[in-house]
Length: 241
Picture 1 (cartoon, rainbow, N blue to C red):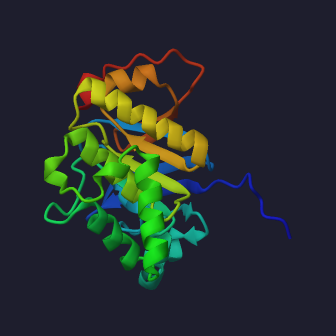
Picture 2 (picture 1 turned 60 degrees about the vertical axis):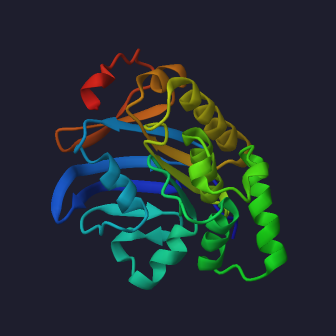
């Protein structure tokens, strides 16, 4: 039986998204296929990050349909969560690197935690992802010696370690200046184009949103709905900060 390559890799239908037991988004309908690039925008507290947490199995789903890869989130067991997360790379605004360890040790820690044991294979994978983000010379450096943009490139390399089908980028340019943010965005788009993962990016960056248009979901008033691409989208993103 042939695999249906057109099947969405993320699929929500009439799904309630909760945070600490409270509904933050009601009746979410979202379908994302492998290779797509999608923005999620909205005010602080509108449920954007709760969607990210639901996708990685952190927030339970009790209503509607929620499928990520081969996992049904409505029936997800705790023992399945590590396997779900191996299919997903996450990039955070604040980098979340181990600042007392070298870049190499940061990446090695993730590989060991996800089942890699062979030292040669680990070394090869680390230098491959560092090369992919233009940071192959930084393996022995401590993150605090790097700029914010460089640290975020390391965070993207970390997200690539297990060749994920999905990359979730939660405000990845939030701590960066405009020029660095655009360079990072171009890196994410190149990874999306060349490696083919679906990328879901939460952002408040108006310049990024306007310069690099893509499918967009707007979270507001307990809902998250796609903004039609054929429309000339003019949103005052300063309201969403």
